[in-house]
Amino acid sequence: MVEFIRIWKNIDINDISGHLLIVGEAMGDCSKCKSLGIDYSSAKTCPECSAEFKYIASRSREVKKIIQKRPDLIFIDFEDYKRVIGKIKAKGLFS
Image 1 (tube, rainbow, N blue to C red):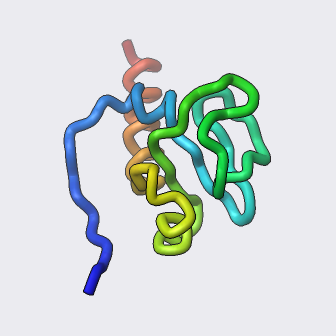
Image 2: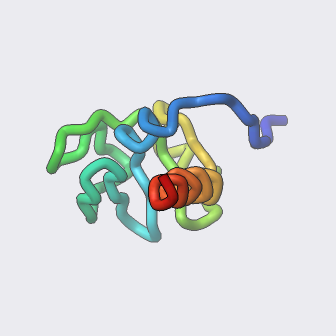
């Protein structure tokens, strides 16, 4: 039986930000250029900025459905991603 668990790993947040496809209800967004309406089930690159997608995250909790459609991408937790980006932005304000 195969199940999903979270695994923590040190990773460069800039690499994720430059290659992340964020999935909404039906379509995806590019985290690099903020392009909207990307068909997440088949897009290998962003149609606007040509960023290659290596990671995928979801605003909802439909992990299995998304991973079944995109097993080629590394699924990351969107809440973790937002938390780290928020920390970086906050540090920038105070430095």
